[in-house]
Length: 165
Image 1 (cartoon, one colour):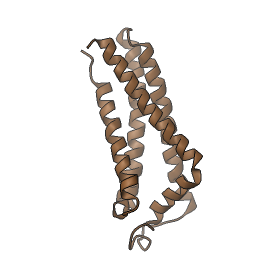
Image 2 (cartoon, helix red, strand yellow):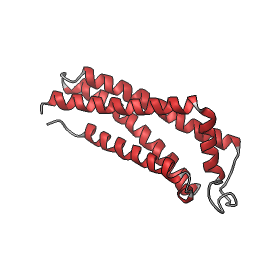
Image 3 (cartoon, helix red, strand yellow):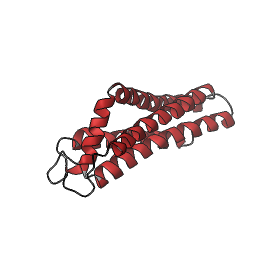
């Protein structure tokens, strides 16, 4: 496989991360009340026994809104950076390394933002701090999907960061 083909594949994979972030953001915004409800269900710890009585449990609207805005904002930034990076990688696929490397760096920062949001927001805050791992109703649709997304994005980022030669 030629360097140009590898660069094309990398650009397409980064574009896929941009599409994931953009579609996820659109779903969050189009169903904003459901987004707030999901964050509230997590922070209130109401979906499992003894959760609501825990000292960390809160339904404070500021905390709920901050959580939802963190998710949406990170998806927006990730979609923009990955989109710009993928486009630049596509355009520089046959050029000397300078332009391609700069575009790849932008794409990797976008992937990093998505990974930070998924790890910090869903693993550290939701799962560890708010005990979401104990919730039968939210563990699979929230935590397992976040892990699946994070693993996929991390693999794409590692592949994109790898040398073409």
